[in-house]
Length: 266
Image 1 (tube, rainbow, N blue to C red):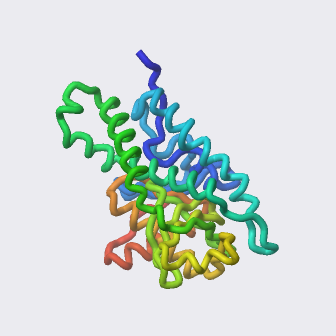
Image 2: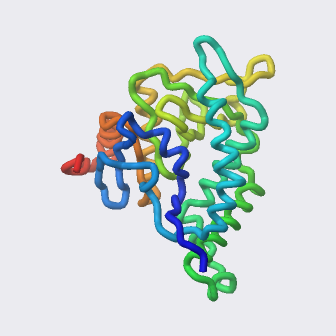
Image 3: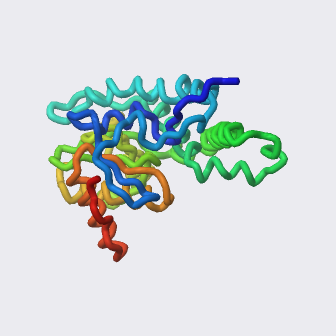
């Protein structure tokens, strides 16, 4: 019998860790419990013992998470003032593959394999999750929904950090163009820009990052991150800064005419 390990259900620990503050913790919103906490840790949030098998964890690590973590050095070196670094085809392909894995790891998507009982009737719950994720990942790669999207980096130069939903990606209209956003640090997000907007990020054949220097724009990103995660009815939203998370909650609850959570820090 294989040893059971503590699996991150959707968002890998390596990304979550980049949102920890100087105390190696983050604030988090638990969507299902409607609870805000202040002692979140990348090794524990959105995890479950034995959610995936050790073999599936190894597959994800080798073919998705490790290649994506290799991009961190490039991401951290890219800046606007002075201009430095660029996005190439390897970066583009690795980032999209990571996103397709995130989509496949969404619990709602994993459960779809149960619609085919001839595949799952004789499997354990863990084996069903393994199969659902692997089949879903292969389907997302085949579908390649972001094939025609340009890939760049949004650099947040404000004092308000990007927040991270454990679903990973969310859509937002920015400068009248659809952006699919994947935050990778409080200051940087990988962005997939729809085809009609790629001329904004490509100059002389080179993909350039762009600056987000307006706090209100960052808050639009953050509210979209929160609303997207809440739409799934599960998971978490994490932030290194309490105020950024609470502000996103206030905007979202006001937008949907609901009361924000009580006793927000426990």
